[in-house]
Image (tube, rainbow, N blue to C red):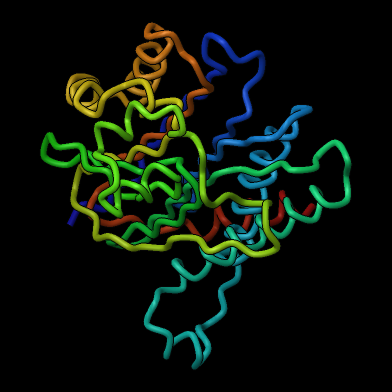
Length: 275
């Protein structure tokens, strides 16, 4: 059994064309948490939405796991894990917060954001996502897409109306069908996977996968996966070398086959965030 601390590295960059970065990333290694959000909306409102998404998700999960309360009978009866439910709650709370600000503040009208969340615990990773930011897993030299985009082109692919190749080249590939902050409620996709030793999980905004083919990303992880920060920085550099048309954000997480949260460290984070 490989009880490893998580190795986590991230990089976010406005790219070569956009004047400002509306992506946000957040990592909380003590909690086994990584979040990527890609905001949209005028007047810099996109960065307000993505910033709120990572903040609300992170704060909620710190609050939940700083409490050392035994599970209720209801929670025990519910087959989904406490972690997976907490991720779903966190995304729902972020949606509400962003939606309410978008409704009440003229500058923020119409803003929204994608989000992808990974929460590691014991031998599992809990995954929540909304929109077209992605999670990939690199295992045994193979890069596999774990999430499914909530986007117009993905729906057309799923219905067999266009091919994946046509989707890659579609002018509409950035039209998302779900995002945080647009409707009073949002349905997030929640899944759980079992870890293997030395998996690398890659969270990214579409600024990465719209530009770099998966085989190029896989080769970079193969060559530089031993140094996650170097790998993240090189992925961003490759995107920008190819024109960097959008903001690009990446978080890389390498796991053992087990990860245990640090209860003391989380209690300290809770005190700091509620100080």
